[in-house]
Length: 305
Image 1 (cartoon, rainbow, N blue to C red):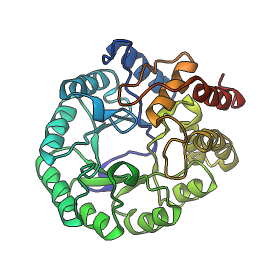
Image 2: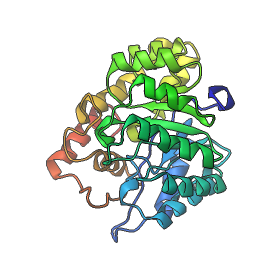
Image 3: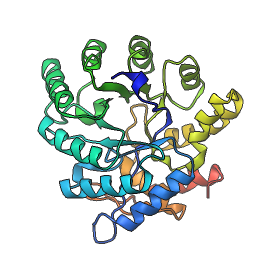
């Protein structure tokens, strides 16, 4: 497989996972969220990613999440399953379930916390590649793993036959361009910001889109790419400015939350709009009132509230 074996492109947000007041995975709320995302024109979604709080979910809950998502959206938009775990063995179990539920691919970081060497990271992806049947998207997110994979390692991993895409969440624009230039013929490259820089990368076919930001602005986020593909650069940038506003208000250059946690920020943004965000799960805590006010101001200034 390579980039030409998949059609993933555009805005594929990593979505939240709704938990109710009893700290349970709320399946009806999840169903409502998925239906809304589809109606708002997402080009795909990532479930059980960083924004989806994979780290606090049980295996059974992840299976429920995959099944509900597949039942509602399989065949309608691109579905990517976050299959992050500490061992390749766990990733392989998750990937098999995602495939059974109709997902189109999996998203995998190097094992967090462990900080394995380049040789060990390659072996980790090699083991996964040998055992799964779905296309694989590499996820490079240094703040979450403590590892920033360099080009030589990414190039080696990209040679594995099921690796088809890269989610580059480094926040380093020069590194992004270097890797996009080197790898875009073989991998779909995600991570282009919704600004003039990102638009140029997409138009030059060096990036295929963006995975992130929780879709909290609804159709305004996929519209950036829709308008780019139609040749309407100025209109695309007007939608992109909305996404950049919330990113600048809520996150730093490395995509880390300026206050609270990213998951709580995204859920608050949905809840304030009357959408099914639900509660975060510990260790993530709900935002304090003054933090919620920042979210409210951003959304109000954008005309969302």
